[in-house]
Image (cartoon, rainbow, N blue to C red; front, side, top):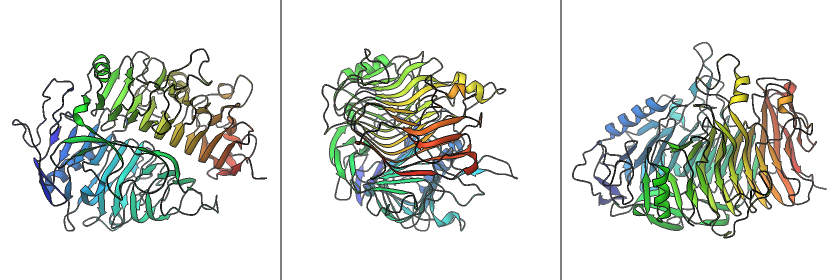
Length: 640
């Protein structure tokens, strides 16, 4: 951990931050207990390791600027790297009208305030993500389609473009795609743009997620193909491409004209729980705030005071670091500790087991668990109130049966059927997954039968990206046969398998798996925004045909015996890059039951392949003759 000053200011109040005698600004703080984590962290100066930087308002602004610029240069193109970083700002003010603080956020970087409320940390300037230009001077190909894995949260941002050129000064650019969240941010003073229109084209973007955020001015969607805004307050949302979904959002646009414009608006979010966040109190002590779950809510959680919930002292966490053994982590969890994963990549050869109710597992800086020798890196028991947040899970070279298992599987019934039910389920205190991301392939070959398996009832999935990689580094294929090799070596059959009842997903992004991307077997499920790309790489139609002769696997499958299910705002996209002649019968497949309802769904051809129908033989075909033109079904089944 790098602590950049020992004094800070909290809304005008001076707050002394205690520090170890050996601490000097910019130096790493050694663990008081061991080199790998501490079961008794110092409450005022916990050891978060070398990849966490903490600034205070007393840190010279030029030093903050230089540090953030250097970090952006290091991470801007580090898409498949092992870089992991977290940057935190102590309560106070950063930047001025004349000298703003302006910086970019790169790959695997978390930027957050350490206040109890967003207004405790005030940044006058810009916190941005720009397009990556992946081509050459003749065809620069500037896009945000691969701007993944970054986080911004828990601060106030007064947009100030002083010193930037005319275009760059016109907005705060947040041009991102999947696995990126903006939470608990209060944006004022200017435009927030979700696309970067200042570079050469095509400027495409494929995000994204905002929650518990207020954007008082214009919010430009621009080229974003799909977006979920949940429990927020927006001033003026402009335009949209395909699925733009608003749930519990004050100021959300009217959706009565769908699909023109392509808005889906739900007045109140049926079930929500905000992500836990780290904060420092007036005595300089670190805590984690764990918000409560709520039903039928709208607007931000912090407008009338501290977000409702419970406060957990940092002393109640085991602070883990890469290299810590699973045995040690499980020992600490069994002792009653919560788990904090500091930034880095953890090789996990056996399961981390979360068995105690209300346990919090909080990742910093996109901490990543990588499966080793076919392990299931993380298992959660059938107990209420467990929260897993800010954690990424990667498949390894040996096939894992599942990467994250929530609730015990009933092996007598097998995968894909309804499995063991949570004996201690509590609808008011759901198991919650917030910003939990999965990857099968990309930086290395990955293999997993299932990425996410939810067997427990009353589980909330609040923003996840479940990705079987469609591109990666050298070694991902042999460089000769390309995607044909990827199909046979980068194995991921199902992205999400939902077996529990009363499971809610707000922001479910699942892509490129080799059979059903999502299978929903549980009763009374709800999904609010679903985004899916079918796999790019089936070599032949035979490889993409079910044993019963059905052409391909739908991107979203609800089991035939399910009686109640609701889906709001969903898209399945096709890009059969490896073989444009491949056909998929349906984007969505659901039972013909009156309690199963789909609202505002679509398919689209991105340039290759065909989806014959949107759902169950209904809806027009998405083909290479109508590339880029969505095929919509407003309601299924259609109103009588």
